[in-house]
Image (tube, rainbow, N blue to C red):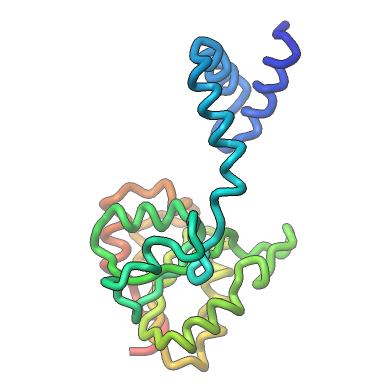
Length: 199
């Protein structure tokens, strides 16, 4: 039987994605031998919700009003890539083949969970596409059921906007979360995107 404080920490860590009780226990035992690391982690975790905010344009994580991508004047502002989360931004950026801007949804449409267009910031997305003179929208969402529902909703709402809409090619297996796709597959999917609307 573990001491209460250790038991609580194991239970808390086990709630994190990809961690079960065994992994959480191993992490706790490691942390016990590293008091300096415990202190650093504690401070960073405390600061996290206060230091990070959503970029006012793309909704990516940022310490400032606008993220470093939106502030970069060398980016192609005529192309907008729609992704589910900041991890997808990082994965695409690591390929060094895309030089446009992003829009981060943070969720996918899921009526059962009460996640609708408002939670994804879709009204703001459509407004940006209209006023920022975007020429191409790339839909780069995971090929899951909710990803497809979200992509269809976005496509439907862009029908009356004169913009080319493409979707990353499906070298990505159906049902796989985009954040787990290897870089080469993601690169090919991005380069071989298919046109959904426009020329």
